Length: 133
Image (cartoon, rainbow, N blue to C red; front, side, top):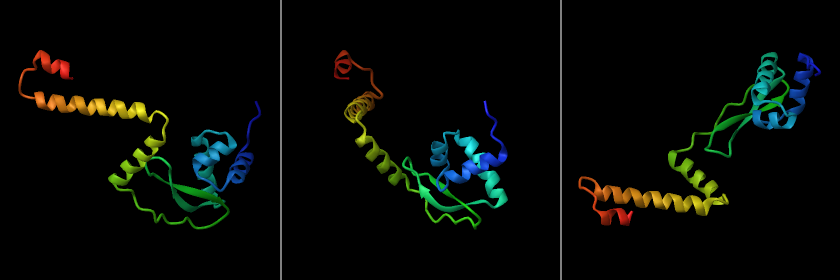
């Protein structure tokens, strides 16, 4: 196995820029934690900086986009998503999923069962109640 020396690692990381940690890790086929250490070294030396911030595809996290070269880090001007916006994004992704009909049926069954249990709260269930669930 060939050992990658510090100079080579920084060159690899610089060539993978611009991008987020995940993008760069995918491009150079290295673990995200390793790329993060390389970026920390580069930023400490002044060879990399945060050029902008972008929102992730998932629940709405905000991640930095790193650029090669000296420069000041860009301030993050994105605001956190509200709980409603996070839920809307989740439902939108869920609807695009091919498992959506199965998930929808499962959620409906759970809701139905919850309603039945709320109705039964405080009284003993009868055999008829068991059939209705």
